[in-house]
Length: 102
Image (cartoon, rainbow, N blue to C red; front, side, top):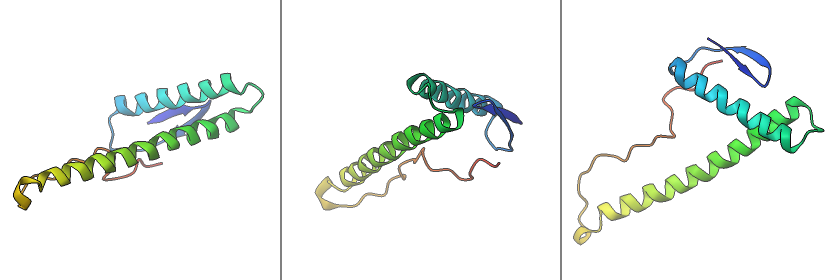
């Protein structure tokens, strides 16, 4: 499929649905426009990089929060008298099986 990011077209292959890819496209473009509004004297490519930095910062913080929640869940599973109970693993929604192909 072809997506448009910050005015540039990219032909990509992905295991994700078209709807999902379109939502990512919309979110990236929204973030770039947000940066352009905050930094009107900057080029589109610089605004795209600033948007990427902002999104990466959010991602890193969310992963840290998720790791902490995962740690607490694991701790709670072993609280019952020190016994370790067999339990289903915690789902990790931020981990990908395959990266989105370019």
